[in-house]
Length: 338
Ligand code: PEP
Ligand code: MN
Image (cartoon, rainbow, N blue to C red):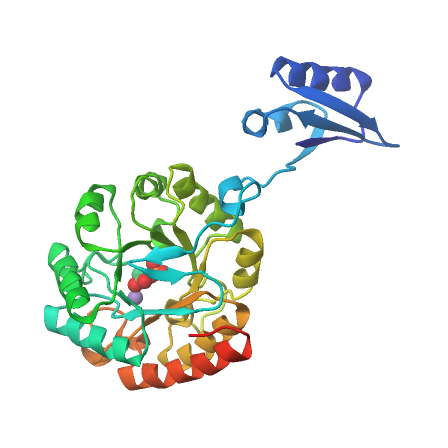
């Protein structure tokens, strides 16, 4: 950590800063500039981070040297293996994965028929919500355990591994009976109790970016999961809230190359929630592949008009099938494959 003093700092204040640092069991090195003094604080990074250095009189700013998300950044480690969702490896280099299915599981027939359609089109993981985070308490909340059972039945028929959202720490053991991957939704990205709980699970976790979260916030939330011992985290960009009202969210494709540069965790893009308008999901899917996404998550419904959630942004299976062909072409153009 580097401390930069105020221009008006006095010698007595500098002596006090150094005494405080030593009092914390840390060491210091002083560099005097023309107007300011720069003090390096040396010692264990975790210890330094928890000390109230910015509160010492005469200190203007405190600049960290190490990234606060050290496990996610893999600064000291070798390349982690790709994350496997029931045997489908994501982030293993060339190959991009498509994760697809309905927003909500509505019935056994619905999820089975959509699972078959998306599998035939090229999807490798089935998504579907059994516990739904709805803005209104009066909206459809999901089928709960029945929904999980229907997903598992669809997996048994199609062979597609499944991903579904967990909203409550109390549901983890139930989820572990059924699913291959846990989804943490945008609204729960900073539910730290939930992050710690899934950090103790053996299942991989797809962490969706909060719609008001910075990239740094997303990385720190991922750090919560890794710090509990679960290294199998996928980061998902799903759009953020901006002043723009023409779209549901603003899909922040800037995040993709940045996340890829700052961490070696696989990066998933969800263009469905990112733009929220069915007709423009294909364009944003192709852009996400060009930006470097390792997987795309796309909602598909065979009868969007009847969907119990997010029908307005669900692709019809034929449109999804056509999109898969175009994704393949863009993937090849950028040196990837589907
Ligand atoms: C979803 O994937 O269906 C979902 C609710 O997404 P988000 O948490 O990104 O809104
Ligand atoms: Mn949805």
